[in-house]
Amino acid sequence: MISVVVLGAGNVGSHLVKTLQRAKNINLVQWYSRDKNSIKSGPKDIELCHNLNNIKNADIYIIAVTDKAIEALSKKLPFENRLVVHTSGNIPLKKIDIKHKRGVFYPLQTFSKTSDLEFSEVPFCIETMRKEDSNQLITLANYMGSPSYMINTEQRQALHLSAVFVNNFSNQLYRIAHELSDHKSVNFDILKPLILETAKKVQFTSPYNAQTGPAKRNDQGTINYHLRTLESHPDFQEIYKQLTNSIKITHGLKKL
Amino acid sequence: MISVVVLGAGNVGSHLVKTLQRAKNINLVQWYSRDKNSIKSGPKDIELCHNLNNIKNADIYIIAVTDKAIEALSKKLPFENRLVVHTSGNIPLKKIDIKHKRGVFYPLQTFSKTSDLEFSEVPFCIETMRKEDSNQLITLANYMGSPSYMINTEQRQALHLSAVFVNNFSNQLYRIAHELSDHKSVNFDILKPLILETAKKVQFTSPYNAQTGPAKRNDQGTINYHLRTLESHPDFQEIYKQLTNSIKITHGLKKL
Image (cartoon, chains in turn blue, purple):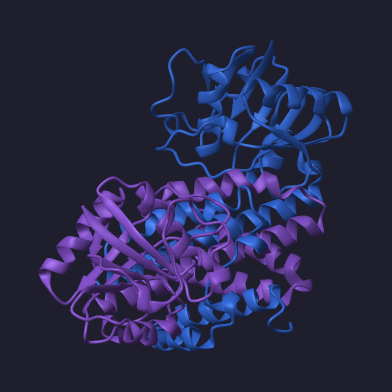
């Protein structure tokens, strides 16, 4: 049995609490949030805590607050020599106060408050100072049904940057497609199966091998036609140019 | 019962043949390809045809060849006044020879020769000159288990352009993430659940509402950190800048 306290009531904190509470072999001792009102509709039978002086003993303290608040919160914790981890993709492990056994437990996923997520689809990136602490975090991930990987700070930051590309930027491409189709009164639903299939394809094929389309075929006629179509959207046109060039460079059709 | 001849042995032609052959109420009369060697491992019990003079009678002829070859092939067909459709996203309906009943039957999906695809996930964009022809194409899509939409040439071209954004360009973002993670010896597998979840999210939420991340939060600290990390990849850095700006414009954090 591993006992856990979660600190923070944002998306990540809320999803963690839900899953930790359901998991066998995990005892969710407390859920801390600074602001009493931030936990509106928490799961039942959880002890809420709004005062750090009332925090109870546990094997692992998971800090799930905004990047800027991690360092200060770790300092304020009124104990030492216990395992304290943060969940950020970008913050070095050493930002956690040195009085603790320090670690990182970074879930590489996109969380929204409204939709549930299977934690089998949430890989955890684990980093610790001491071997026995990483073993405990691996076990914790395992109890949650999640895969886990040993990832150092530099690797984690590369993953966080990569996540911006595959998540935020892909989503913005969906948004652009939504605008383009709306503009011609076309139902965006028509594009949804293609969006899903594009993501499914790279689960088994490398993105390099999965590539198709005018840039990959070096079909300059279609590319020019698309660029003309985008003349009224200079920002979309620029993105089209950049990504077309990037595909050509990747596939040896153009030099960097 | 609808009888069909498929012309062309590329990805689209091959997938169509497989599905048409399996479908109830569809009689796949022939599969035409100019080159005898282009159909290597076709399904059994299909009559192959390599000479246009031997093409048989059918309700619908589906031309699934490269964009450039559509017009010429439609001219060469040794009959007239039958329903002839192409499957291209970008070619106007009127490029099909006027001697035919003309139509478009454009599957908005990404096809690869190696992997099978459920046709329930392949929406068909239908355009015809005559109402009764579109009814027949809607029935054909229905027999294949596919959704269908009435889409004119201008709308279809907007969809084709949108498809480049959500498919080719998203895939290139996956490729960039693959390069960035490889560069730090990080397993690309860690990013795969996030890629899938990003695509799943917009099946039920608009891309506008699904957006998260440093650009959406206007978190200039993280953005600057990422831009510095990308200094050794000026092309990726430029794409990062463009898409970050695009997100900021979409969410009212910056003017166009």
